[in-house]
Image (tube, rainbow, N blue to C red):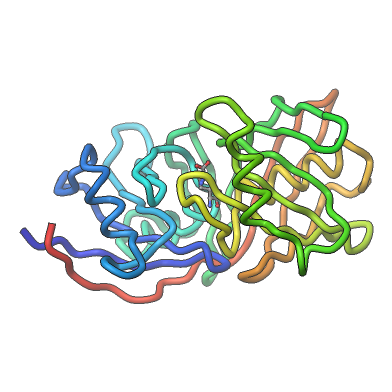
Length: 256
Ligand SMILES: N[C@@H](CCC[C@H](N)C(=O)O)C(=O)O
């Protein structure tokens, strides 16, 4: 059977998007998911996103990492909004449901501002911070990101957390409101060009540990620039928004 797909990217975090309103996609088939995401034998992507109908919300977003594991993805959420708009499911504002709960988003041209879950699970450790921003994130400041062994150290730290492990973000402070980030993503098991839930964790971790007093943070990543804003009250981070580009790349058809 043939299946249409659409390729999107958000600051270089790339996804195969499928309109699964007819339930065509074999969700249980993790080998198929890995094969589609394989950069040599498939379309090539960091993950797959399915858009499905929902009775209460504009749509349901389902995210699988390239290894078939299911979780939430921030850049994927932004791309899902752009794709839902392309499908005619939403206009410029939407409420949708995903793995970690409900999300509100706004889209203008190809810039998507996505509301993330409220963040209260933040653990400050000696040299790092752990934060749950829809998925698990380790955040660690390093002196210079350019030559930093993101893959080697990221992989070690990723498995130092109990199942399902953690994504790992290495951070360099540029100024009072700007933090450069490189991320090792679990489920992709490699460095990706950007991670939305990752930069969200970084912004909150930097605020929590007093590296910044700002509640609007710029986050240059390998694939572009992201922005995170929030309000903070008694250690609870609310009104958390992740903003950046979400871009359609091409469409095609594959054999299922
Ligand atoms: N790239 C994503 C995060 C995707 C999920 C992550 N690999 C995990 O398994 O937690 C993002 O933009 O948030």
